[in-house]
Image 1 (tube, rainbow, N blue to C red):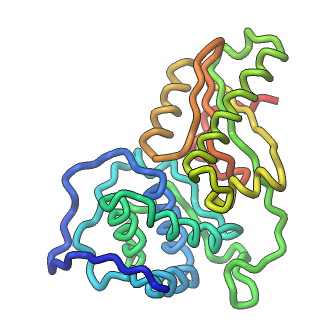
Image 2: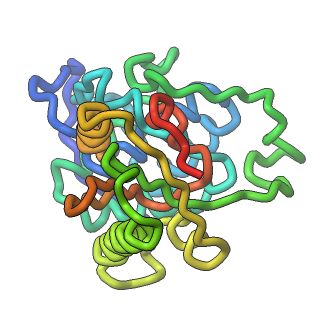
Length: 261
């Protein structure tokens, strides 16, 4: 059964005046928009999925306004989970407040525009020639996908003994996982594909260290503005755990941090 959303039509597209931190659903929608901007096959596939749910808009009454800082750190949607991720997003929109749901719909419908607005894909690069579009379908390819969770620690981590660091990392990791489950209303079938795969297929944690308290706070601010799911812990050391994802998704965000072996 198709789900219909009543959308007011207006001949003039307008930019919303308020620029707010992105919600998680909006950040996911922007990741899809970036994928559509760089992959024509996916753009067509996305249009078909929106039409199936009567979410394809002939005109967009309001284009959400974005600051570059909101968008630059959003990871691209990986083709490895794109199909499952879009189904998840369209289903989760049913639980979102009406204004947020409308913003997500408008973001996805920006893929109809030619060219797709560059402002909606700042900092995200996807190349259709990478070889992921095989046998006429963009999602059928045999590539081993590695899932992990990113944990960022403040500069004080070097003062901790190994067992203390392990304890803190385990705690903030569990906090982030618990948030994911809570946001899914404790229903495992509503978990995001990457989170579900991380729980079932791999539970690796990758540590990154900030050189200073300021650099840690900068990353924390970027995460909050970009709508990325996270857990924050500040006890013996500041720690930030991001939602489990495909390894390498947060390369831009982590570029100035040091991997902790």
